[in-house]
Amino acid sequence: MGTAKEFISCLRLVPNNKISGGKLLSSKIPKSSNRIKIALRNAANTIDNLKEPLLSNFFTRIS
Image (cartoon, rainbow, N blue to C red):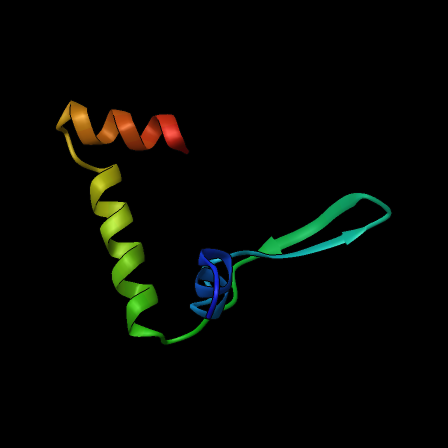
């Protein structure tokens, strides 16, 4: 794996965008039982739910 985009795609963390005629039809994230994927999602959700302003403000800003 050469780039970060390839790594994230391999973990199936990116949505599967279906586009037709320049219009987004669906953008579902494929299901998988990858343990790294589950751990990264749980970490992101935990940080999102934190009451500490430093981390939550940072992640809100970059999202």
